[in-house]
Image (cartoon, rainbow, N blue to C red):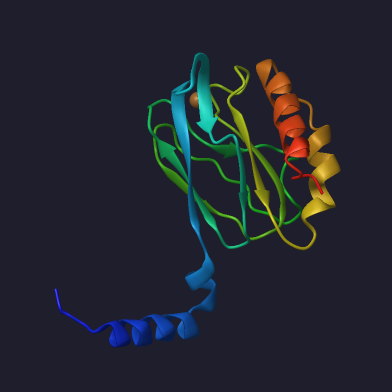
Length: 160
Ligand SMILES: [Cu+2]
């Protein structure tokens, strides 16, 4: 490994920022796909965290900690013009979010068991799909889970 001075390192970093300003600020986040919640063993099949706020251009990695899960966008719970995604079972899936708004997603085999989550992308126009996303009807335990998620998001000031 080549040794470089602190000044050289700063010059290199500065150059990267100038060349790729969007890459320099984009962050990576992880959402774990788990068989059990680490703090509540009675809660099975969970995304952790189940609510995540990111900035436009950020990437979320859905990480296969336990096998048998995936991450897939839910019809009607995407901002207009946003791309759907559907990860393969037991495969890590990276999704980059560009459009502000509310993104509901599920695990295909465990949706009706309540394995769902919400990504909130900050920025202008974020609220445009809020009412539509909240109005989506869900099956089985996903219904109660989303009620909790929306209430928690509201309490956290994430719906304004
Ligand atoms: Cu699952």
